[in-house]
Length: 97
Image (cartoon, rainbow, N blue to C red):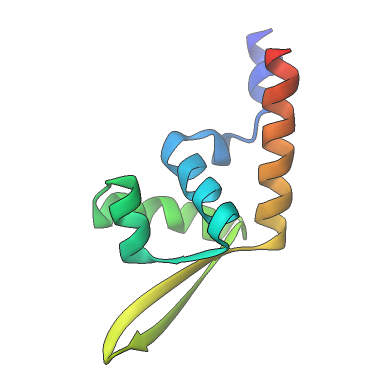
């Protein structure tokens, strides 16, 4: 059972911080790096490494721009990310039923 459990879960999304990121972006569609950091109560480095993994999978996109002359990263969920999150949540529902 344990082997099939791991095979059925999206382990990229399953990690707690990444699940929180994906859920937050699902609800808000986009967020500034600083807003995510404050909401999740993680360090810059921790958040950055999780965002890098999600971006590599094309679940999110990161756009860097200047806001009031300050560099700002805007993170948004992609269509692929939305689809993968929905699949993940459906899998969790099936596993707990």
